[in-house]
Length: 210
Image (tube, rainbow, N blue to C red):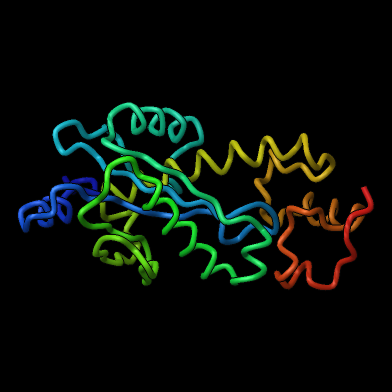
């Protein structure tokens, strides 16, 4: 029988063996939505107490993500979440804002990492520790998978709260992604202050009047 593939702790163990005792996994979510921040998380897992069931957040149900996020917060040596709001996305573009949010998350950790594993092709500039970019890292590294789960849950909860600040768009249901309902709401209400005006679908829209 073929073994189930998924993220593991191989990269972290190799770095620990090289003299890097604390490894932070870093990932971001929210590149595609029309509204809300891009959200990054940094997680330093305890090698002796790894949460069970960690995987790429996109492969997990919403209920499983919440349960795993709670387990990560309970077991990890350090967890931090950071945001880059729509205004920064418009100013720096989505890639630049994502890197900014990741740098902020690493800086916010209560324990300084010796090395960071970053999901994707790029590492944020100006880090206080060396870093390695890992393409599709959330499917390969347990630390990055943990960060992807924490970031996703944190962003989803924030978007649910945005329903109270800009009602009518359904932020809690679609988390700012360009669903048919969301696009229809923008057509009626115009974009809110939480929308990314630099995105093509919004660049020619008038602002909201509510």
